[in-house]
Length: 302
Ligand SMILES: [Zn+2]
Ligand SMILES: [Zn+2]
Image (spheres, protein in one colour):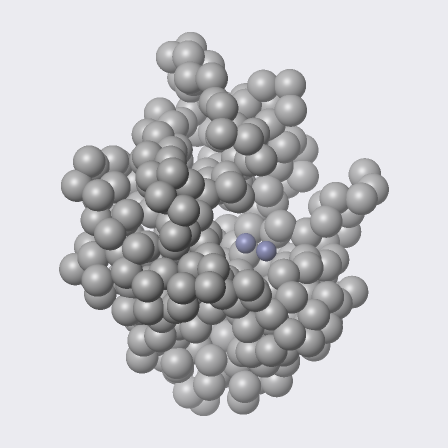
């Protein structure tokens, strides 16, 4: 019996057809799921047919999966100084948002990209301009900006910077935040003790605002805090470790947020094992922040 209705899923493959992803999530006992709506390493995407999109939505509903999250391809770079790459990235991100809309996904999530040699300020401005254009063109659902590990001049390694970008687009309610535990940890947020984790949560609240945190990517990390290494690891097998995840999920405000695993898929049992560990932590009832409650999070629609 679980003490509260958490939402937990994995990033599932769309191999063999996008609707197959829903079956995969279901087989793993997920209550949420994440997919790529197309090949994440290529630019080309064939349009989704109406019957395929409908079949997907119906299955999602039948299995009560919520949220469905569409992850934008890795190729996109909204901070790039390469004009063509920049133009293409913002155009294709909008296309991806429309695909997410067709699939009835509540959230689409994107990385912000890397500014290259031109520095953080320039990169941030580029991201803001790209997002403004995308918001103007319009879409349904919520676009989540994901924090980065910060390697190679990646934009969005600090909550402060993500908050600046959100402010740059006028704090549009269609823009939210996705916290990736591996990226955050390797960017320097060491949350392995309850005290450190509470400090991080407070910083998140002060900058971005907890109300805008809509999704958590749960990944262990091969890199140390501040290493800026974006190498996902199985839960408990990386530098964060089970202690770190216990501290993270001990924050009541965090475990109410939908969670998606993006852990490695090296063997057939990997997803099951990682999910089982997280479920055990969530259901153990451990909570470290009882004495210092934070205000509840609005998890309403949109
Ligand atoms: Zn992630
Ligand atoms: Zn990553």
